[in-house]
Image 1 (cartoon, one colour):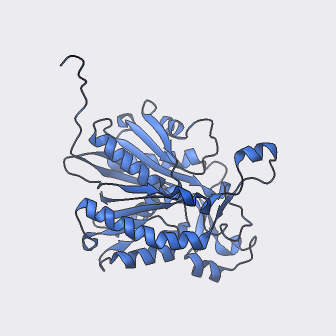
Image 2: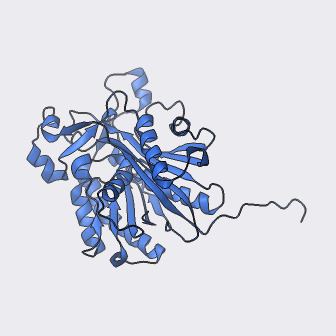
Image 3: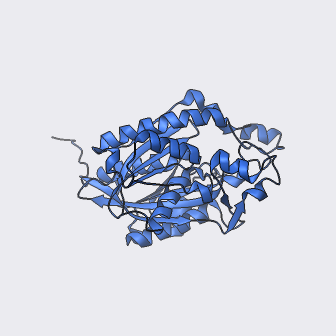
Length: 333
């Protein structure tokens, strides 16, 4: 037929080929945080499970940390930077918004000709980007995709705010996705509840800051309401992701949710009815909440410590500001 378009034919599936992480050198304990807020180490541990977190130094930028994590993931995958077709970056703390962070990250990794863009879904951003990467590979639009979550939350959190100062940390995590003859990433279950966006938001807009620059806009969160929402939403979308992938909770090798709060992690794990053999990520204890970086950082932590069997299924769940959420099952590298 005249004028008929042709489209590429992609592989049956995609899968994670490599995982990488970058954690800033500076480790901050609860006692240091409590110098600025009315709290103590015991209260923070009981409220969140957090013992330490990493704060980035001057040279550890959102871009620089992402590059380090991405290069480690590429090395583990055995994929050269020149073979990367697309770089997807999830971040809510990249403040140089003249352009996206992804093109600079792609260039610094040696993938300068790759397509590159940012994903703005906050703490759910990594799982959003993973879902997009899988779809693009299966559609034949890309072969190798680097997905990065990278955050300097210390730049956007008020160190004197008792509700948020102790929660967040900095870091970057990345995976490399490539083609697979069998599905290695299950269907993504995602969505938003925009009518509740004010539960996690900056206290003032950048437009206001242009006219009145003091104080700096910082993140605010209604912790109790977010907690109640999360302990319902995470198991709900987790079950849907399991069903979409055609497996049950008993089949899971690992459960890797966004590291928002250890009580959310433990409650969700209980509600999902996980088996005793399923490893549950609790990287929040030493890393805090790293927003879009938390899922890949937690995944890297489990893999690097040898706690996971290679090739088994893991349930990933992201949730947070927006309110946005996403979940999918992946086969571990």
